[in-house]
Amino acid sequence: LCDGDGSYDLPVVDELSGLFKRAQVALIGVPVYNFGVNAALKNLLELTGSAWEGMGIGFFCAAGGRSGYMAVMAFANSLMLDYRCY
Image (tube, rainbow, N blue to C red):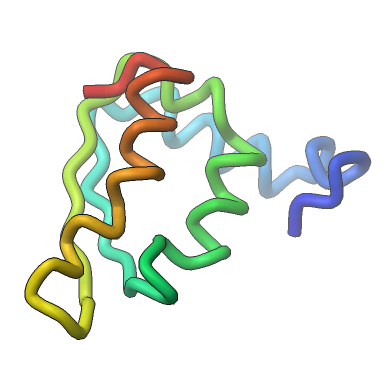
């Protein structure tokens, strides 16, 4: 988990960052909790953020309501604005 300190130096974080840096696109499957993406996905982005730079992103979500697909918008906006993803 991202603790804002030592977790950035863990070998698994380097491994995950390397995977994202080599990828051109990412397809993210995520459940929706309380009108947002789950904490695990937010944690992944926090630890590997700059590795997502310029990547194409797609989402598929499991949500209860007919507008549940919109729950990824805050996360998607962060990817677009902070990391220039499309």
